[in-house]
Image (tube, rainbow, N blue to C red; front, top):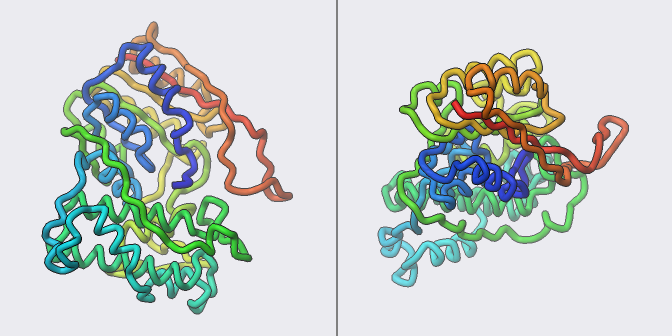
Length: 351
């Protein structure tokens, strides 16, 4: 999924740094997991991972890509869908053939709705509605176990993102149909990473981390600028949550009215340093690795001061890697990017 701050391009860099510092396994906590790319990579490297996010979207991805250890048993669905439905792959194929059923997404995020929002074509919106509603019904009726439910919701969110009529974020939609938006919605089954002992939760990092038993690695990847994720990804969040009860919307693009519990103080220049220090101070871990962009609202000197205050100063180091920026839009009079290449910094310290 297209996601601001996604670390897919930096996984090798993060892995190299951890290896250089001798951090090769044990228990790891990723409390800002997002689309779970780093948490999934840590699981592949042999860590037992606790992946968390304040958004339901992050929790859904973490359950599918981190907590799930094998493809789900879908035997309970065979009686309803037919004897040929004997695997998760077969269930996905059946969902891809499901007829459209207009519902919440069709009414609020397609031009068929009263507000005329062009996020999805009416056909794709109605198919998103049909699939998400059916998944919710299967889960509520006990026909779909937890792992299977989250794997299929993840497949739906990713499929919807591929046909979303946006430039990568949902703060606005494009006023004409892009080629990807005109393609039919098509689900693909996520690839499960083997390995037991990893968990996914929806939680605020500052509430979660201090209550944990001692663990090995705290990987911190907080928001680094003033963009609030509930506003930039409100539609994937709504699909992840489901529509029962339907969320109350506001504004031109249909933001969720009640999303204060999903907003982060790390986006604030004023609050960011204090909440980072609070998080680091409360973590009972052996190692800390903080991913942060060079353009972030918390300065490098402040991060160094905080990590040295709660770690062994001789172990502190900031590793840097330049990479091509993720751009959700083009330069304009209202916004100009500083450069096409940015610097990612991985601040590390041992406790």
